[in-house]
Length: 418
Image 1 (cartoon, rainbow, N blue to C red):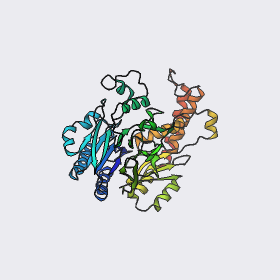
Image 2 (image 1 turned 180 degrees about the vertical axis):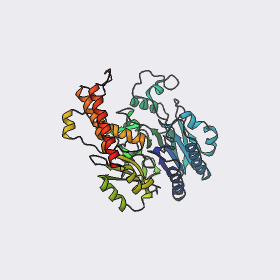
Image 3 (image 1 turned 30 degrees about the horizontal axis):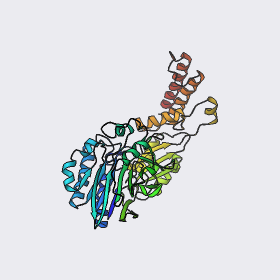
Image 4 (image 1 turned 90 degrees about the vertical axis):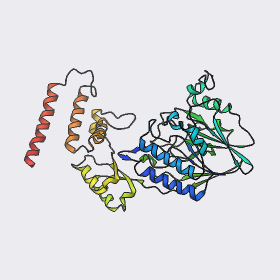
């Protein structure tokens, strides 16, 4: 038998200011249904994060409903588990009715996982549906009643050990977890909600299963063995995914020890493109990109100072394809001497962080005069021995007068130019 393994659909997700549910996600659904018609799998497995939010938008719910309806019309088995972005109750509230149409959605975690047997000729293939696992949920009296369980790895092992698998049948597990291979983390992008080593489970926890259909990590890849595999997210949800494979994963089960994996190309409405350099270099690159409407474009601006009306010039060249402008900022020797510190997490100086905040809230880049003003304020703060001193009672009068003179000077220059 054959089945498509997909995960991390994140219906309702935004890419910066782009509502993916308006165009890209519906287009993907239609192309996916074409692939189902072409390859004729017996089943589709969806390994969590169907929605981007626990309370999905009406548009996201409508799109998922359309996908399920079309798969039901094609008489396909559909197996779905909730991920960490989903509400298990909301996702599975119609499960009793849907199961009559061969659509099975796991709900709240129970000691015995939802499992469905599908006959493939004279062979039995069992699909086991494991919702996103939390240690406290597994240790709860309503599940395993084991207060000794404290880690995600312990929780997954204990829960799976409690399942009565038929060792002669082919057993397929759906899981949505952060899976490692002997301590080595899977290669992930910036669009996953993973903090540090939270939720780590070693792939050996799944040794009793013949294929493990994973969700949670957005890059397609095997973990530990070829048949423990992330499908990856279907669309580009972050520029850290540039160049990543977005093909479909088609799994063919020929027997318990004979499982093959094929990558099936799928057309996307948009892919990502990044251009970088000075403003002039980026504008020049923009003139040479054919059919910009096929891309979502990020411009990485490496100018030391941003010229006036930079955003306006970029938008004139790239149009709606431009979804983000990023500053790549390196401090000068003078700034380093002043002691301007870099944020440990982002690697950005305080003024670069403010520039990013200003761009996000005002949808405009700081010009050279504004940057100079911000640097002057930072310099004054640093002279006082702290950055943005929260315990300071007042700004010294000299600093205030200096800033006023600076602003008045800019105003006079502006009038003279006019």
